[in-house]
Image (cartoon, rainbow, N blue to C red):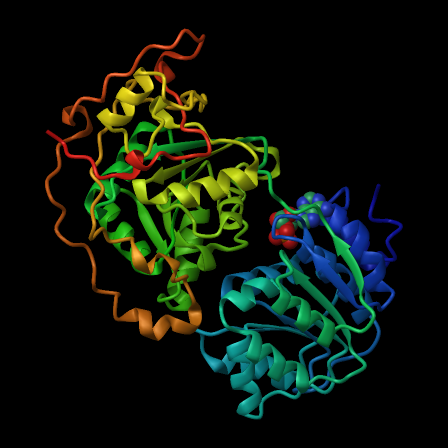
Length: 497
Ligand code: AMP
């Protein structure tokens, strides 16, 4: 299958070839002919599926007719984050290289002047985050009644970020006769309501939900204690044990992105941070430094990192188990791209058991543990019960990654759940650009002095486990899983003698 029969113009096809795209992705195959024909499209697809080109290419074809007028753009693309908006602009640069189109990128964190100049000159394409777009409208710099095509991208993420009222306000300012292309990875009822309201007899195109991780990604879990300093130590162990070229370290909250960033910096890692409290200049500089290898590690939140296209990230480290299982797929999808090999490791504390189960349920597979560890809180009680044959005996297959350098069992520590651990209650609070101001108070909350903890090799000895008569790697010897049911005793705090 090629791009030739999708209805795209010769100029567009030549740019597609120059970009090195040979075969259309499934979403492109389905959506492009519909969009070129002027139909409304409801696309259920995630980042990484090629969905950006699936709306950029037909837009370019359709924009070949007509011209933009000052302050009256012809097309509008709404994106939830600045980074995604900037990436769509890059697509226009590459795929629109044969078109003399003016593209205005209206995102927060940068000056209004350049954006105003572009709008005054007459933008064919406006790519915007909702807040900044509304600012321009309120300042009288922009009229939306010339919009021919509207794209709402990542609608479910817009919902997460509280942008839906803004989107509704914006849509009221658009002509009724426009074409609408609406993309979302999932269709919760609120998004369905929005789609019903904004789309006219849409054609629905759907690519299989990405419930599976790319087969090229090696996934591993590593036990971590609940307390913040111990967890950071576990992260450093992970980063040192594994042969890492570069990595993104995901945290659930931007406050923790800052903390992890400063901690790693203090420990001599070449690291940058990407979260909503940073201004656009800092974010772009950090991303560029990561892309060109000036920094090897990037501590990031989901929203800031969503959809980032960094072609060769060797590792993903999940400092936190994501609250929403689908975020796990997004996160680890940053590595192992385009058929390359990738490695994703996640720290799991005793509190994370439910979230981990949800991820494994979605993946329909268990993720093996580094060091052959199994339980989240390995207790002598649990060990005893297994020795007595009470364990549920499911083998979690904890084979060590072949990149793994550390000695067997090195980080197999008995951990002590901690009531006041730093990542408890607030864990549901997601990174949200709209709450940047509120969160900025945490900015200097910063790195508490790390308590001196024993190094992994001097940690309490692992609980003895019975050897199993299976042909497993030495590192995973004698490890059994817990099955779907977690006995209550497994969740109790452990006292270290
Ligand atoms: P997206 O899902 O739009 O974020 O795209 C993910 C990556 O796939 C981007 O780097 C695109 O440039 C790339 N891409 C999109 N379509 C194709 C294609 N047909 N062939 C090869 N790469 C593509």
